[in-house]
Image (tube, rainbow, N blue to C red):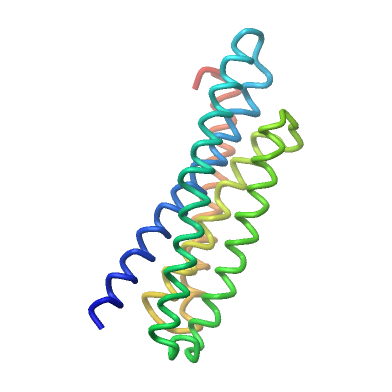
Length: 182
């Protein structure tokens, strides 16, 4: 049974690095979108550097972490198939599916920006950046409390946090209008 905890530790490590990538990549998207509005040569210099940073983050950290977190999670199910009989795990797996949808949609944005196609605003990407946070809160509450309903408290908490974040965005936007260097 000792190997189970090593596998679980590796699963958690790669979940953490996966989320780190998902938290940071939309921030790079914000910078890429904003760099496209800068005058030359800043636009080209920043655009090239931000694309490189995004490419490395996405292909060296985020994708490998997603794959390894998934593989170690599947190994945990093989070692302990009773997990699949627990209601809280069913709810958690729904959130894992949502996480993959979020990841694949983020990959679409990544490919667009790598090809200099800007379809979303930097404000949209700031909000998009919070999607992984909502999923993380729900999954952590589920995994720790092991109750199919307790995730609701986590989601309500993150919703309240989301409202506060939105208010913070509005405040920051007003500050930036007054002082563009902020």
